[in-house]
Length: 236
Length: 349
Image 1 (cartoon, rainbow over the protein chains, first blue to last red):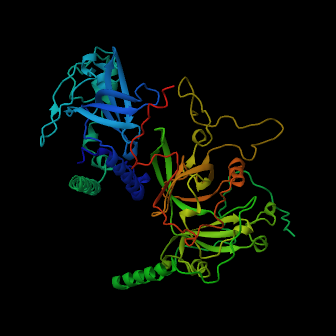
Image 2 (cartoon, helix red, strand yellow):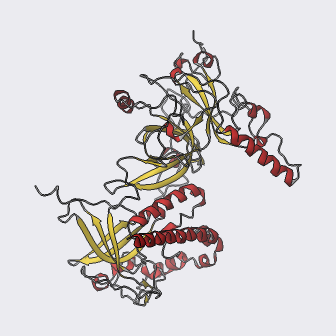
């Protein structure tokens, strides 16, 4: 549940947290979900998003792409879809709870080895191209979300970011030539103590007990929705 | 008659005084129940709750005062709210509207002084003349054992539980409110323009670059010991020394700030919440004074239209229909509505 609904967790900044505010925001999110189905997706899944566009010929705009990043908390949650259209890479940022979004379809539900696929910007275009008429491939029921072990090859440097400094599991040739000065700076910038810093992890995340409570609320909401559906079916 | 303050000089720099004003009554303290057993303490707590649960919805001590009517230049009471933080709401065009959430907690009118009496009190300014009375509003009912006897006595006259925070609103006599009235979120309507007054975030002692936005000097190329210092402070040969009010390092923040003309986009009557478009000064959980705008264009809109705000405030007896839990502004998208779609009919010209 925590992976399916990550946006329900608030910002872990204790100085600006309020329980009532979070409750009202969650209520708004539940109301939106009751009207429009927001499916489960992860970074690495291929999505098709249809939004209402006043100036488009069909009044709708459909974009297909691979989800490379997810961010924001509660109603501010967004995700970025990447695709290569007519030879140029295109990225679209969508707000998950924006009322203009009419449909989110998950064409392929899978995860990748990394949480953040922004390195696809420095990869050859084949890794980010997905045809717009891709058919949805639903997962069989009860199956856990598969992890695509694809290892991507980066273009030769210069890159947009210093990928050699990051621990990226989904990338093969993560190295480049560094001058002596650059090597020294890279060594200095490393913070190997951060993975042992328990207080940092605690302050940068939500309490386990609170997470449980929030996810339980969502579980009960889902039960309520299912009951309503059953009642409707029974009536009709 | 008005009081002539011969030694009055308007002060334009940041006003900070370490001596308490004459009307100040020490608040915190009082006979804390420390020597009691746990059962006795719990019993007292239940007693207090029982007593004040009745007062929160009890009838007024005296007969209700006559209600004034809206007139040109009327100033109504305001509310004392707590800033809960910010959320996102969405427009019917799909644009995000960043809203501040304010909660009006247990507001009661604690006292009213008519203009004639108010003129002779401390804290009155001579340019107000005979225009305004003052209404004291309290927020957040609390257990009186945490406060001094003198502070608790302020609330006896109104028959209202002890409040944690008090504030005063200047009010024209036709908008006088009787002490003991409960103030609700329904005092305002969705679409109203309000002024939000709050104390800004306290940054402590800050340097000149952060406090006043000075540019500082270079960080390299031979600059020594003064990257973020103010630099020269002299003005000319005529005035010796530094002018009073010179921008220098010092305490930053914790100043009263007014955000004028903020619009209310949503009201929740169950939890007494106001969603206001835009930001509000102050840290999370700070007290915010909410009043009708002073901006002339917005006031003109009210005066020319037929809908005047409810005077002096909305009483629960006035609301004949059942009050819905949420009120939304017409431009705001309600989350339980379907997604925004555009029809193709308009385009077939």
